Length: 110
Image (tube, rainbow, N blue to C red; front, side, top):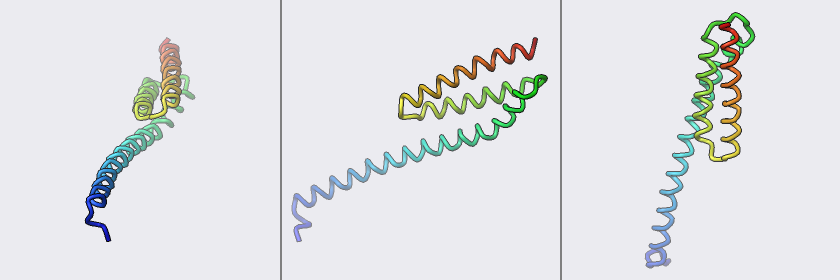
């Protein structure tokens, strides 16, 4: 065969470089996925406490703290989103929830 020809050697180097690039992209995607999974799990842990606070007119400040922590995790997910529309949707929802939570918190203190 012609495996030792300059053209074959050049193609082998190109494939090798391509594999290096692909490996880097896959590792980066895996890191993002792990970060998103961690944030998703953190949100899941806090959602019940946040919902309980919302259902309890006399709930203390811990519910608001849970919601703020949830929003922090949602921000991490938004930062990792490649799709600008998806990121903007998450950020818009976060803004609405933060504003409503602040108003509710004031009403609960009053």
